[in-house]
Image (tube, rainbow, N blue to C red; front, top):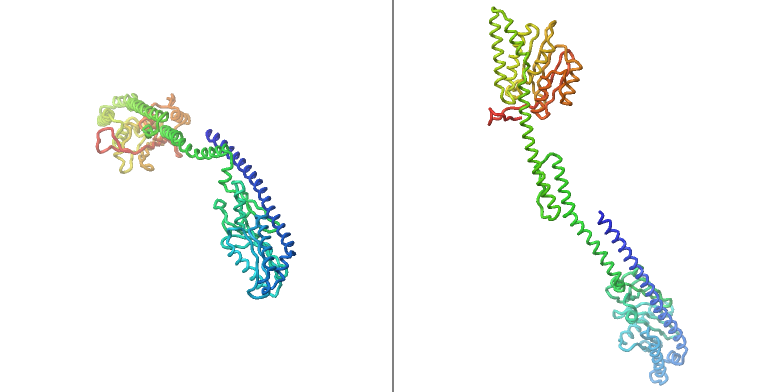
Length: 568
């Protein structure tokens, strides 16, 4: 952006400066050619005025009067008639020399006899006299014929544009008695002479009163014969007052550029090169700066999202960005290796902690069970046997638990055995209900998880005054999840206990007024499932405490049925 903010204003300034210089040169050129055009047109008008006066004077000369009054038969042998013709033609020749803008003059005498008319014509040497002679006779006779058909009197023509043999002319015809006289101007010759005399920065062309180009012009003017002329910044015109012809001066772009100073042309070229360099600079900036920066930012976003396997793709870019990409890839690989090592170390630590937590058994349970056995009378031997059997199952289950997970059916069988031991302690004080949905027996859960919460129910729910029920229900919950509900009909959890549980879940700091079993169970689940399970403690509407544990459904893999490998 900084580069563009510098380059673009400089280009704008150069373009404005070039445009100002170009307009200045164009305006100067317009002024110059307007002055030249005015001079040429004034010369043309002056020549026309003088020729007009000369014709009026010549019309009263003796030679013209002799030619107008002579008849055909007399004139063919009259020396005076031939002398008058010669005198008129010499006068016309002198006028051609004095007024070079005119190409020729003529006189046409109508004696009233068909086919016996006379004429006198003079033009520049080298022109086809016969063609212009025939065309003028045709024009005059055609005008006379049209006037006779219309029953009007023919008075001649004003200055008018005509085209003969692919050349453009201005023609004027006057009438005096039986004489029709006038002159013509070859526009092509006039333009050729004027263009040779003028500056090469512009060229001339003629157009008639209707705006039609009536002279051949060079191709660089972009004007063709018959085009309608429109005023523009690159063309100006001056109108002749006497003939009505319009002189156009056209400036070609190449002509203007050729007349411009070399310094200005160099500045314009530099401006164009600078403008052309902007796309190239954009491409270079995008390839060698923006694209590598974006790749690096994308790589940072990937790493920030936890993708430590991401590597910046190799490219053909060399220099500092290539070194930076390689350094970034190396750093990410080292970071990934460090994180893997730290993760493995943390997993091992969590396994040790989990096993420690799972093996924590409250000693008062074992002592109380032994005290019950001691208190039995000898005649209660069958109860002693049953208690010893239940206690042996209990210790056998605890001793055999070596893995992080056990099947749900095994855990529920252990809970039922545990409840039978507790029934011996509290006969007729509570009953229990343990049930799971069909298809859940092989689901895996952490061992002794349910016991931690049932111990809490027995400890706080059993009342010596009324019988308490304890429920353990396992059901499928939503997609790929299960819910373990432990509920009782006791007094429920106190507000202090619920607050302590909430503080422990938020801070993971042990609470003195909260049993170690509940805290161990919460911590075990978070370690084993990375915080995925939800444990909710609340009191039911009908009374009694309820614990809901929502965790993923897991089963053993077929390949390692006896190892710690599971499918979720």
